[in-house]
Structure formats: structure tokens, C-alpha cells
Image (cartoon, rainbow over all chains, first blue to last red; front, side, top):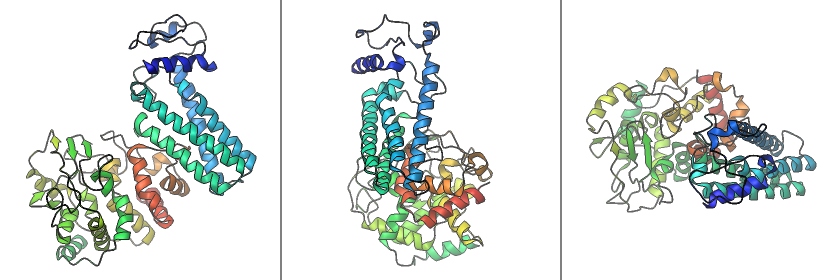
Length: 180
Length: 265
């Protein structure tokens, strides 16, 4: 219930999915939202141009791949294998922090493993939405701190904070990603 | 031959003096706490559930608590468990990976035992295993006959490769999750590190031809859990990194990297 509301809010707030209609079979009272559409499988019948669950998965997958690349690029700087210019550290940190602001929006109900076979997201993302939100919040907090650290320009501090960001990735993968 | 020699030495009960600090480093890679500590529980007090295709095991309390733990175990008892999978007159299930630990050196066993004795005793009973097969422990004697190759391995000429193999196969027991098993639960050596979909969670194929990682890719991953793609692993492997490989020396991580690239086919 809470999660439905949170999801709906997240969806409404998200430009990426503003056009996407959703409904939740488990929880009836729908917050102010576009007229209820049938659940995920019918997404193909959605208005032309609206993202299907497979589309949402594909975008989500690419966004996390990008996040990983920023992590890796940052770690090369932290290890002294790439020039650690302050502006570059900030750019990577901001990209990661930026993703944290819409991370939850990328997991609307109806895009789990029961609908999109390719996804590595476990059903627990949606059945334990509160827990998942908490992990996402940890990532938001630590990546925000990474931006601050990067602005300070100290490579060692940047590397240490990057480790904390990485720990939030791993902690979430622990419970919510297949095979972890 | 080497196996017999190693066994003969250790079963005589005369391990070299152990160093608990060294043992503490080893235990991270060996995973003693990882499997013998329940979530939020006291170290080594057991009760951790290990899912396998044969059912669920609950790890025993291996603190020195006199009633619920190892109590009056001697060093010799410890070595017997680690090298021969026997304890208190019973055959142990290989969910406790003595098939790997059997190859640990006398010195490392001594250090590990010294560390274990430094862990405070905690009274806490574990739960009985919930097995679908192999409920009769006597069958394990037969299993050992077929699957257990006791004692340290013959050293390789190349010291770094030898160290890498030792850390991977004996202490780290990587193959226990990453190598497919035969119908009896024995590791299929020819498919070493080829990955499995078995519980507790799928373990990927990490053979060099599949992975294509450089030495540095490996060393970075073992230090901080980040793959070359920037993925940060969680789950069981996340614990292996945090508690085990991240705490090893850079030289040991380099040895593991080399073995994974050159020793594994």
C-alpha cells in the first residue's frame, strides 16, 4: 500500500515515465493517477510510444551499466592509474549521484522477473519495497557525499568514499539481485 | 605419498606452534565465521543455514563452549576434522568442505586452531540438519573413499603458482561453489570453476577462457569486489571478498590471480 503510493508518486514525479500508466493488482486504492490500465502484460496495448516493461528493463539495464562504468573509471583515478583531476572526479561523482535521484523510478511494478525474463532484479524488490528503498537511500547518501569529497579534490579521500559507495551497491545486490 | 606424509605428521598431534593473528587472517578466506556465525549471532556459535541440493544444513557451534560447542577438543581433534572429516566418532558431511581443507599445511592448521581458541565460548545450540538425502552418516565413509583425497598436495615447481593453487583450492575452497558436482556430490575436477546453478546461489563460470580477465582485473576484484565492468558483487562472493581476499597481502592476491589465469583450464 505504502509502496504503491510511493511508486505512483515516483512515477508521477519522473519525467522518464510520466507517460507510463500503471496499475497494481495487489493494492486497490489507487492514488490520483491516470485511468487504470491493465497490468503489465497488456503494456503492448499501451498508447504508441509508451515504454513497455521490456523497454523499462532495457533502460534500467543500460543506466546501471553506465553507473558501473563511472564506478570503474573513478576507481582507476583512486588507484592512481588515471589523472585525478578535480573536475573529472566531480563529473563521475555527479553522474552517480544523479542516477540515485531516479533509481527507484526505474523499478515500476510490473517490470520484475515474472514479466521480464532477462531482468536480474529479484521479486523481493517489489515484495520488500521498503527495504529496497532503504538501500537506494544509502546509495543516494553515499554518492552525495562522494560529490562533496570530489569537490574537495583529495584523491585519497575520494577513493575512501568511493569504497563506501561500492559497499552500498554490494549491500543492495545481496538481497535484491539474482545470483548475488 | 605426500598425502600420507602430511597426514602422518599431523595425526601425530605435533603441529608447530600456532599464531592466532595469522589464523585470524586465514579464517577470513577459509570462511570459518562466514559459515559458523548466524546473522547477528556470536562469532562461531553456529546456526547458519547452508542450502544445498541435498537439503539444508545448520552449522554447529564451534566455539569452545563445553556443552554446545567443541568443549574439550584437542588440536588433534581439530586436525582430524579438517583433514579427514571425522569428529566425535562421526563422519562429517562435506558441506563442511574438508575435501578442500584437507590440503592445508600443518602451519596454517596450527594458526587457525590458535585463532579458534582465542574466540570466546558461546553457549548456543544449533538445529538439526534438514536433509532430503544422505541422512545416514555411515554412507559418508563410502563417499570419502571415492571423493576425498587426503592431505597436502605435491608442491608445484613455480612457487607463486603453488601459492595461488593453495589459496584457491585448499584454504579458499573456491571450487566448492564454482565447480560442478557429480551425482555423489564430488567435485568434477575436469570442470573446475565452470560454474553451477546450485543453491545457495548460482556461481558463475570463472574459467579464464570464459572470463578473459587480466591479472590486474583479478587483483582489483579480489581487493575491492569490483569487476572490470564496474559491477560490485554482493551475496556470498561479496562476503568472500570483504572477509577473505581483501584482507590478504597483495602478493597473495597476485598468486590467486595467476592461478586463476594459468592454473585453471
